[in-house]
Length: 196
Image (cartoon, rainbow, N blue to C red; front, side):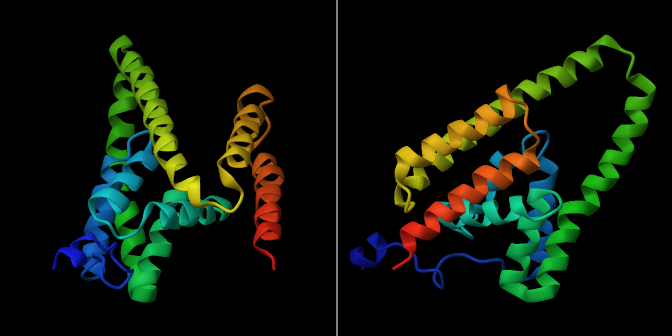
């Protein structure tokens, strides 16, 4: 019994969504928490809280979601929904990600149009931006831990991450070209390491 408790959960034994409606409400809750920095919320909910995926699986799926067109978290929700319940699951997860946030954004747009000139509203929005940046940075540090098993190793992954930050922040290169160049280089290097 003690040995079973110490053994890591296999993909079949770990928790999973119970139904498409579970996916809908889980992604609705996730979307309603995702103000400004949804990556931190998604990682915490799917990996740490619900345990539907490991940190390594999350990093891999998030990478795929980033290279697909459209919002990353919406792409990820579709992938997870499809994995567990096929098309029904993908549509349920997508509806969960979009329905209530759409209604909320429409209501907030009306309120913002009325009060946007108020100095307190402008200050609140600047404060939220700083918090979102902190959430994204914190999640990046958490996800870096899962890189230890990556075929390229931590030093090369750190160099690629630093080059990405430099390209985006210092050189102000568009995300598309940065992702194409550095993401493509990372894919080729990883493929060469894994090739027999």
